[in-house]
Amino acid sequence: MKFHIKTILWIKLTLLLLLGTNAVLAQVDKYVDQIKLNNGSTIWGISEIRQDQVIIHVSDEDSVMVSAENIKSMRTNKLNPELYQSRVGGLYYQVSTGVLVGSSHQYSGNEASFSGAFISGYKLKQQLGLGLGVGVDFYPGQRHIPLFLDIQGDLVSGRITPFYQLDIGYSWAEERDAPEELESLTGGLYFKPAVGVKWHFARYSWFLQLSYVRQESTARYQPIDFGNGNLLTNVEERVMQRVGISLGMVF
Image 1 (cartoon, rainbow, N blue to C red):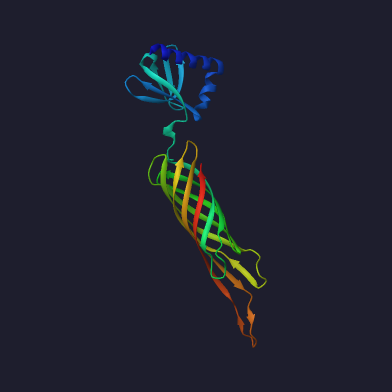
Image 2 (tube, helix red, strand yellow; image 1 turned 135 degrees about the vertical axis):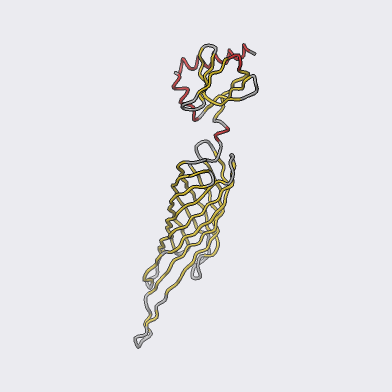
């Protein structure tokens, strides 16, 4: 067994001499060594050989020195499985695209429409992140551009996690192929609660999400003259209510 371990150590030493220590350590984001000790414990890191000692770099600042005779086996793995976890804190960016199905408003069709969004924020902890987002939603006859506050968090830790998300803000509205009698179109409340599932990888996460989307707008048409100075102003209070299904990435 010791012969097998020493053979592995000499192979790694040869690679270090040929490629340089820095070149090997630069692969920490792609490859890590799994070192199993005789006492049954396991250490993940980047190994460096120094005679009969192995230095295991477990982070940019911390390292562990182990004697070769205390090592049971060594194996290089692509990415540390322990890195496949939900993010505890720090900056996050989210992009998504999906479809919206359901009711538009009383004067429009209910064809499926498309949406997309980008969010940038900061995760205070695993269960709570705050950010700002902007999106675009295409409806039959209308296009909405929401600007919103994003609140989200992972409910549990692990590689696959359920998560919640709440977006609330203001949505600008624009009429597509607007009729001549339309005088103005203003936006309104944007509200989007959602739940989904994330698949975490070392540097990013994929997610599938189900949401409810509500967007309000007001359409004002040119007054209609009925004679005798009587003018009728037609104002439509439009409410879009949709179920959204989206796929996206957090990084």
